[in-house]
Image (tube, rainbow, N blue to C red):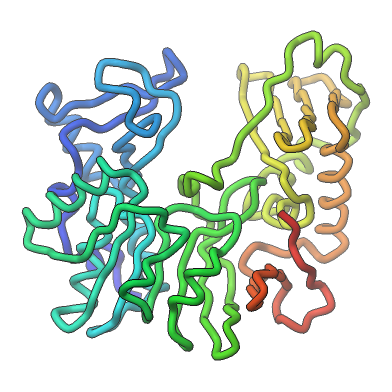
Length: 368
């Protein structure tokens, strides 16, 4: 396979804004790094094989302030290359991109589609879309950059040969399938609320369905109206919660929260369950499960040298019990890895998952 550096035919630097954001351990938030104030650090961030946060808090937080939530970024270059390889854009293709971001990926797509191709990139944030248009024009690329909700696609220029999403999704929007011609390909970071997403490649069929395989681990920001959210019970609520213990070992708990082990399967088996893991100290870790819709919550408190560990649960669902049962199912199924899974989206929008093949007895429809 071609080295990923060789696949990225457009330089990244011209698309990165002069102010980017980095983790700040002191505040547990994000602070800005300015090219004007610290050019060596800015360049080091741009040249690294790492994602770069280009906006926080949907633009509400300004330089000099502390951000709380990343809301736009330029993806890790090696992952950009992997997604482009999966998409397989050819000369003359019509391509729809969801999430223009900095505009760098749209330039890479334009390079591949060539002068006879057509690239449309949809960006929900007006300020981000404007910046992408300016950056693209400055380096001589002219894809159509549309400000709007990318989950609706862009019907005006359909049909497309390829659709790629640069944010993660819990469900594959129906317009993407409708706007892709039969035989066309959709590539997106897809997964549940539980843990990271999988690089998923679907082929659209004549009957209006789309089907394909899951693959590599991806950690992308969610499209805005599918964002994950968490509960934060008060100390009194935690004290009043149902309290039990788990006999699981540290190794088993590691498997339950790790994408390449059981986490992807657990997410497919336990709907509307958002997983968070926090290392409070070197010796204390919190595994938490959240369902904001039903106001259900669970926490496993791991303390080094002290086990069995305590489980607290609140709300109408017993999320830990559901996750525990899904873990047992994963073990009984032979510990399937994420790349053994496939996804089929039917014309009525049903999302069906399967292991190894669509007709495998281990297949089921997802609920959201």
